[in-house]
Image 1 (cartoon, rainbow, N blue to C red):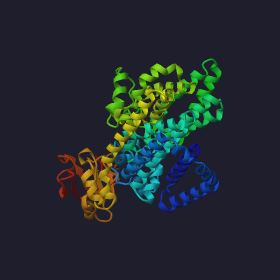
Image 2 (image 1 turned 45 degrees about the horizontal axis):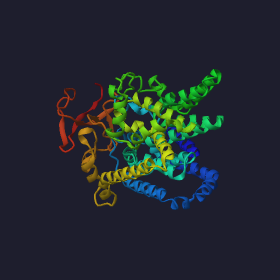
Image 3 (image 1 turned 45 degrees about the vertical axis):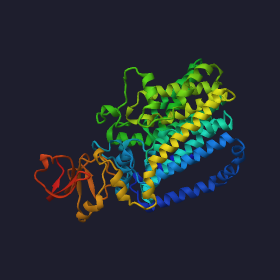
Image 4 (image 1 turned 135 degrees about the vertical axis):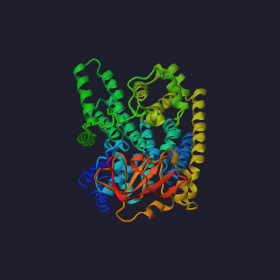
Length: 533
């Protein structure tokens, strides 16, 4: 799995290089992708085939509980696949995860987008580079499928991690505990990046636990590289240093020299992986972590340095009242951890401390992410569920845990099936993509779609539209610039405006098209107009 993670990182940086060279065209992407896949097939093909041939299906079939968990897992994969095959509706995906790659492809290059809308453009974007390829080949559905597949990779990584310390049945329990969280189901059907970050963070934890047991420096290096890939996917992963560095300090608390050396090397490697993106950001903004530590973020999206102490309340709300809830099974086993804490193995105690520190790291992140920002740490909490089950599997408590895991998985399955059912008509061509989007996009919340392509039909070759008052621009399919990044040298022929009243700066303009359902109005600039206000 580490090899797969590193290959994803390498491929992303190859696309990054194409973007910097101004070669983001389909023909170059095809050549690069084909060459890369051919090279991987030659180097890794035989090894992958051998591993697949070693899969022991009999072990699953002979254990009825494992078979039940595997069946539930496959059903959830199918339900999530239905959502992944439908058009994109996710807010952040339509805001910047897909819009930025689309702009890069239009310009055939990677560039910094100034202004107050796409301010995340300079942050490390490992997965967005892969989404750029998806858009070049097919569109947003391929990007969604990539994120969906990363969710499956998370399950494989969790199962492998749990299987190293637990029985097969317990490993399936840990895996189903993760995948049956509503937040995982939601993330599996949209082109966000959180499952990518989670995949890398699972591997980082896996190799860290190996290092803790074996003391092999190679394992700690692998852990740091995985965490660096996570930070290149989502910059909030730098916060995981708050988790790992105290654990390293705990390990070497009696050897200050090694403590300092290992903390420094670990942190250096974590920052080294996303360094090209940090340099890119520094060149354009003089801030390697832009938009963090800049005035452009509102209070809801900034890191919270101080928050009133409400650890227990927030913990409870995270599991049960979040907009995108996570599996509450951990809350059920929490009293058991208090009772059986002393019986935990050394590795399990490390994971317990990891969970406490990870919750502290999450506590000071913006609340805009809900359970999504906690998702990378959820596998460790699921691991503790497995620890409790291992200690209680012969008792009534163990049977209760298995029963609750199955019931919660069924609840998640029914809920996600009902939520994803709306995609079936468009998948089976009983409803057009346009009808689906007009019915399901949230235009009051900033989404956009050109109903019937009427705006595009009104434009002539060479026309350029200035957009004001619209937030999510992925589905715009005509030449445009948004007001926050429009250049003074550009000449606009039309204004696409969403709002109650046209600002006075535009004067009296002739309205040539209005869509009352979406609230969009298209005005004509008869003599063309420079953006200079």
